[in-house]
Length: 302
Image 1 (tube, rainbow, N blue to C red):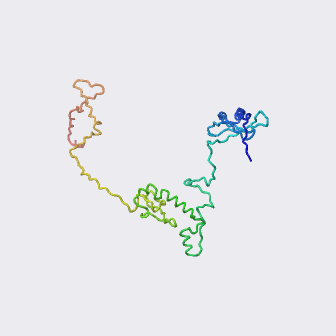
Image 2 (image 1 turned 90 degrees about the vertical axis):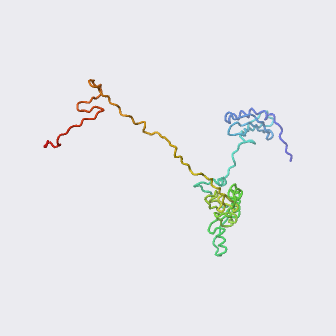
Image 3 (image 1 turned 60 degrees about the vertical axis):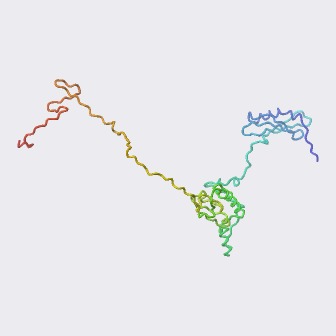
């Protein structure tokens, strides 16, 4: 079967003004831009495209489909659309809540949905009564837990840890002079992962409380040391006993000498506010007369 492309249609091509007038009735004012052309979708059916200038729809286009009946000289508008172009800004594809979370997104109070088909887990084992089988299940697979890590889960965890900050390729490990395998603070893990990983128990290490590989390392290794430089000699302190620091007294400027009282000359009247020595009073600058005493203080005997 041969598919023939539709021929050009002059009537539909000339209907651009009709298409723009229709957009003026439905589009937000000022959001219909330049005419981008027309695509002939089928015989006597075409789509006129106009640029969308709305800030929120960059790269989108207005589309107006037009058609005509056979032998008609007038086009008719079928429908209008706002469709994304090749460079349109689109919203990301919707993802379910369980698939939208990323490692590190879980906070206090958040709960992950239960995943019955988690590929990283497999069913745990119950006691069988056989000592060898139960001992292996308790040691390796976790006796009593509904699910334990599967082989796929252990491989994913080992790859993530080995390639992360606790592996041999981190910056702190590349600059270390010794490895965790000889460190006294290294605690091996239980199970199959103990041959490669352990936990750091050194509070001075940047990896304290984290999973580290045997070939990881840091500057807090228990068996490493550094060269101790000789102390720089310092001479005996010298005390200069001849140096004197003169400091002004804090109250030196606050002490004022007593005011000198004026003394009136003989025959002069004292000025207002001045006090002259009366009879029996000592003259300023002279000693007061000593009162003579006769006999005892007892009035009976005097």
